Length: 293
Image 1 (tube, helix red, strand yellow):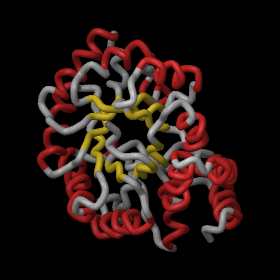
Image 2 (cartoon, helix red, strand yellow):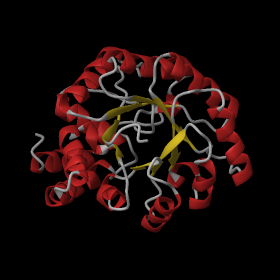
Image 3 (cartoon, rainbow, N blue to C red):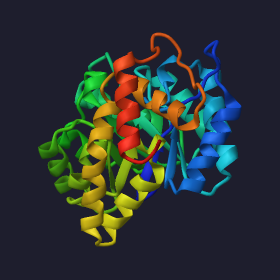
Image 4 (tube, one colour):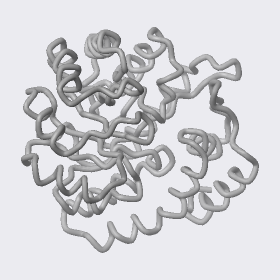
């Protein structure tokens, strides 16, 4: 059964000028997404700069979002690691602070075999009781979750879905063929939401939802309720803005876009930094065209 249907925002993590986490702004962003109609919030994913947060910050970010949301929509904690024991620690801590589910990326860099990959996920899942969403993003991790691997992993009881960000539509279709209706398929690519929904997907874990949460949620629900024309119109209208927010490595442009929307800095932590001026101009142009500025 899907943890959520619709649009889950892969939330940016606001930071002070010195790079420390700005928990007050984080609360404001979480509240805004609840009010704007996001169907779930994913804290400490790629877009949340999780790879540069230390463990205390990582858990504090998830806990802050959980407390602000207060059960109104699901909060999903990103807790993947290339170190299985570290993944277990982050996952159990995220469950302890109230996360409704976990987003667990494949173990990057190590290049595990399918057998050891399954053992990795079994080890994490055995220590938590909340649902787990697999996260496949080969461009980041160097490891693709193949359809046959997903078919094997879905046998683990609390693995209940996948964020599929390979960009390979043929692979997504094959995964959809191999899983059942109780296994949630979420798009990890904002420009491929409707193709994924067309083969039985449940929604999107979205980057663009950081600046267009209402529109992105409505797009998914329009499609799921049969209003396909409206959904297609939204998907196509978003493409130039999606291209702008991925014109540099994520989350650099989208965090700048959130800053433009809020008219306040959210800052970055090295090795990420401010986008190029041309990127800023493109963001302003496309956000204006889309009616956000």
